Image 1 (spheres, rainbow, N blue to C red):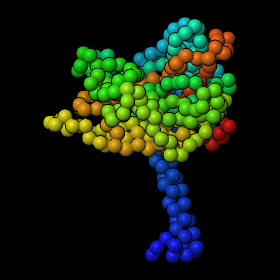
Image 2 (cartoon, helix red, strand yellow):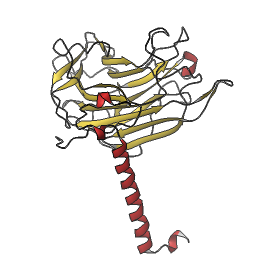
Image 3 (tube, rainbow, N blue to C red):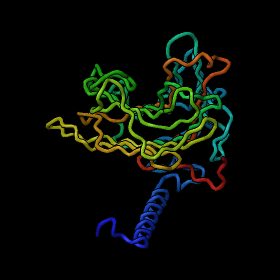
Image 4 (spheres, rainbow, N blue to C red):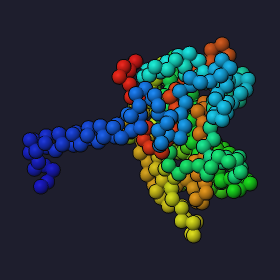
Length: 326
């Protein structure tokens, strides 16, 4: 039957079936998520699929020191990274992470946290080999005075610690990252410079990118991010498999991004590595600006807030709460 011969009633039936299928798939996805099993994330840290979690309620020294053995905090004269009293839109916690940056002359500005997920500085750190398949969920809010700027943040990647010359995660401007023994992909806001309407996207340093800089994947379903509002971000990275005999990097890696529970990016056939010992061993909650406008001085910094970080081997999903605050 040709498309032009489909009756209106049959077309409606097909459409209804499609809507039902999509709705059913979304509902099943939500039920299978880790967060669905834990109201307000209470007890989620003990789930066997969860690797790490932080709701920023246990920081010490007036919110400047993370729990032992967790984050490393970036400290400099042009940023402030600390836990402050506030709340996310969904959930009962009282504290959130604040990363504030300001301009001081020329140059870039950076602040934030980093977390080792495996051996990262050398092969003898005792942190394990890292992971090949990870999900990371967190909540993010851009400050009321936030405007779109040249920004990087929230990097995920790894280094080949069997090599002495392996580059650090986040090192930019390299065409073939495999020659330097590393990979990474950032999740960052995008928007017209100076504008208030943003979207979240990937900035990926994979093997097949065309130039020296990271690739911005196309967003298939745009979710508008507005300063002053909390949004749930979840990313999935699955590394490509490797043929150790032929040193072949197979085209089977995956990257996915959910914003407020909606799958906005799905990218298959990604290649990050040529050797199997290169795994995911590094994550950062970070802001990195390529020269802030002068309006963002120390008394009026540009701020980004984070909360409810969970890292797991399975899809996590948004907070399961009976009384969401919006």
